[in-house]
Amino acid sequence: QVQLVESGGGLVQPGGSLRLSCAASGSIFSIGAMGWYRQAPGKERELVATITSGTRTNYADSVKGRFTISRDNAKNTVYLQMNSLKPEDTAAYYCNADVTYYGGSLLTRYRNDYWGQGTQVTVSS
Image (cartoon, rainbow, N blue to C red; front, side, top):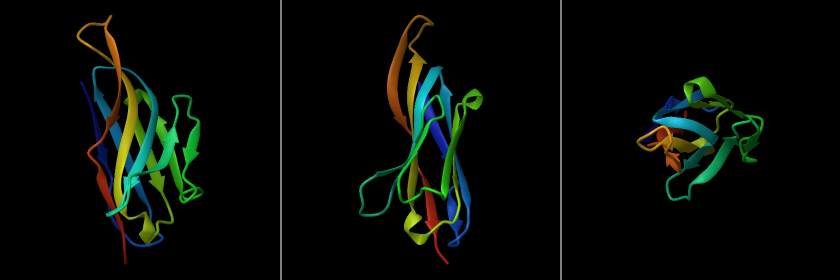
C-alpha cells in the first residue's frame, strides 16, 4: 500500500523558520494533489496549503507570504517552508496526498486519499 511520513517539526522561536517534508512510499503509480493541513488543540483541522501535480498552489490567508509549498515528483515528496513563524502557527501538521497505486498487478490500480501521522510545530519563546 502507501505510506506518508512527515519530518521537520520542532520547537522554534517567533520569527523563526522550519521546513517540513512528507515522503510518500509504496506501490505508487502517480500522485495528484498534495497538501498540508494543521490542527491546534481544541480546534478543527484546517488547510494550510495545497499543490497540484501541475504545481499550481493555494494557501490559507493566514500563511500567505510566509509559507511556501513545493514538491519533488521524482522523490514523491512535498515540502512546506515556513518563515516568520508566529505562536498561532503552533499545531500538529499533517500532509495529505491523492495517490493512485498498484493493486497487485501492473494492470490493477486504485486511487485513495492518504494522510501522514503528523508532526508537531511549536512556536514559542
